[in-house]
Image 1: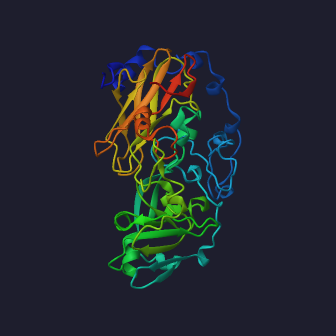
Image 2: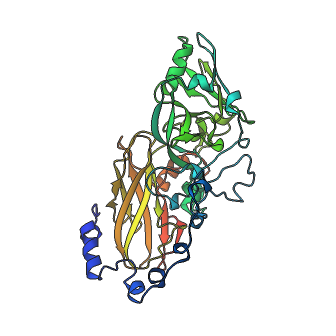
Image 3: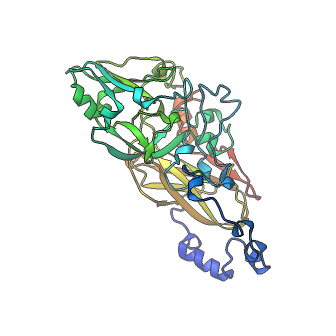
Length: 421
């Protein structure tokens, strides 16, 4: 088993290869040697003035990036009110998801709320029931944290085998942003907790009235009542003006449009934690309260929506990994379906319960590839294969599928979703 990249995949090896080829690593030098008009001739945008600063008071991407957007799957998400769309992971780099590309999951459509009329109530087993306006909440101390939010159903269609072709659709029910918010424990302390207070029930203000039971230990640990993401106010589809942040735990617990938190002495066993968001086992029983998101990773490039376009030669493989229990100190990748594993290069910040970016550079000789990634988290947990998960859970589950993903890349660089045994 190989654990390190060969000399040709190091930065020094890459530079030597480039010099040996006359500096034309990607294109072989054909374009500019022949006088490429894209560089030798004036382009239209070089000959007229562009828009002034007042033309775009709120910025938006280039028209040439209009294909980079959230997408749904018609046969999977026919009901667009109570449905989901997917983050284009294959189009992103680094670890931060732009606000306009964060996946959406709604149970009753997007609630459009006037913040001046929005209230947050704390009631139940508290010494002093309270109702806060947004202005009241702005007076609390606030914190900033980068966390991933992953739907428990992310990759759920893959339990029975390869289904959806593209990491946007297999793994795109996730985003990773910086949240600004109030530690929930400060708000609960303001109300005062009774001695028998063991659980909270956050409730959303949307038409579905989304609720989930959260144990008090988690509520007092790292939960936030967030009002901003990536520096600006939450988007309406992300819970404007308030949402609960439950770091490392399944996304349906991150109640959006947060209007009420009830404190109780036991879980409520509502619909979204009994008939839904439970883990079906092989014998037909279901596990409940499996909140934590296990370590997981996916190669975003190359992938079905991001084929290899440059042909043979130096190739950059990249992807993301995350764990609901801590950081990701290591990711292994294989280009031959697991015969040989190589340690990827981790890059960028390593933050707990956040996405981590990894890279692996190699020289592609044009032969077919079987690409996989395997995450290791800071607790020592190693991402399992799908077969290892199925031995315990069977094939009829939906939630918490963190099995290793495989992409097959053919001689033309085209990738598709497959499984290898």
